[in-house]
Length: 365
Image 1 (cartoon, rainbow, N blue to C red):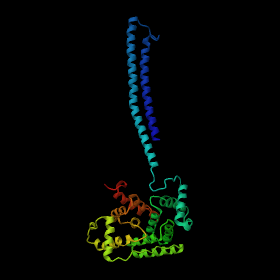
Image 2: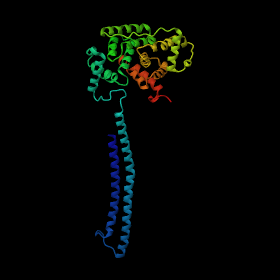
Image 3: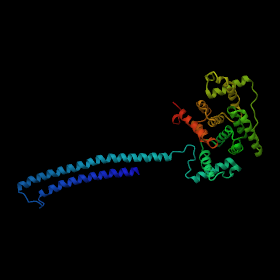
Image 4: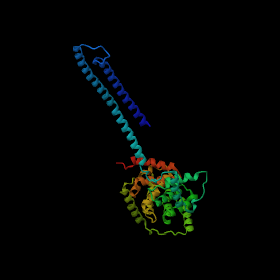
């Protein structure tokens, strides 16, 4: 609308300028014509007529010059302004087209309507929740919101695999201690293709960050679901290793993720806690079967997102996650996938910290 109005105004100005130029030219012509013997004025003698003919020719040339100058002036004023308006309008249109064609990173790009979004959400919900998918709507029109926003827009995002998203879901409900939905999320993880042992390892991993007394009942609830579904658990364990060997393994795993072990600074208070925690985290837990290091870092990022208030640890966690194989986009996606379980604010806080750590979504130079 803005483009059309501006173009019309400039067009009106151009036409007005031409009109003024033409009127000026016709006035000159109307003043010159009587002296040319048109019968409107008394005729003159031959010498006077010759002189007047020369004057008329001069006047005609003058009129043409004035008329051309007026047209040129109007064009010089109008054309650049019109071109600029067109360029601006085309640029705006290009920007709009570009913004409309930009891929919704991680979203289902083919979604064109709420109905289609709801259908996609229902498909994912049925896959994730299985027999528990038809539980009814707890509040009027709550089901469409859940289908479209929760399952359609968030959980259907494809930047992480289904098993990765299941790990995030398990971590979120575990850290928030939402025990009532743990069986449902364990079911969903199994439906997503996550192995029973991997589910248990998520709870083992978070025990370091949330406490062992919180992780133990979660593993027990998962075992109940396994028994109901008749699935077996891989019970493979690490061979027993003495303290010196665990220390050596700790150095190897830590070094592969952080570089030189000696780079960890000694502090007055943190060093009182970190040595045993670090020893068992890197020397034992990260080496356990069931989850690889990349998947365990998904647990760490999801845990930090849900817990919140851990900003001081995030830069190191981001770096370690990338060393383990996660991309910047995948780290952000882990935070986004916690939204259905713990809301948008914790995820938003972590994404804000990512904006600081990775300006423009890129690694700092």
